[in-house]
Image (cartoon, rainbow, N blue to C red; front, top):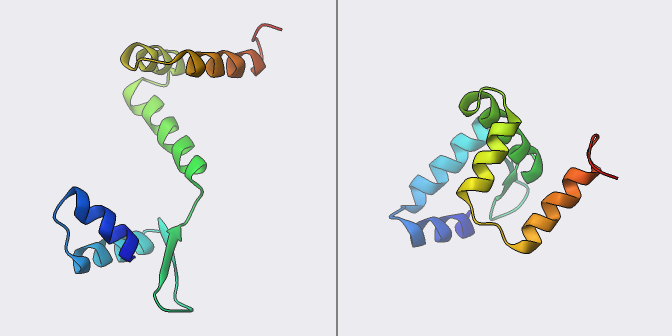
Length: 102
C-alpha cells in the first residue's frame, strides 16, 4: 500500500487515506486481492497483467474499431514509431499465426 501511495503522490496530489480507499474499492470490485495475514497488508492484482491487457484490447477492438483487428493494427502502426527490433518481433509473431508465411 505504501509503495502505491508513494508512486501516486509523485505524479499528483494524493492523500494516504484516499489511496487506501481507492485500493479498498478496487478489492470490492475484484480488481485487487488483499492479504490480511500480516502487517502491513499486501495488495496484489486479482488477475495477471497479460490477462488484463488481453481483455482491454478485446474491448478496445469491439468498441473503437467495430470488431476489426485489422483497423486496430493499422492505426497502432501508423500512430507509434516502431523500432527495427519491434518490427522484427511483430513479423515473427505474424509468421507464427495461421496463414503466416513459412
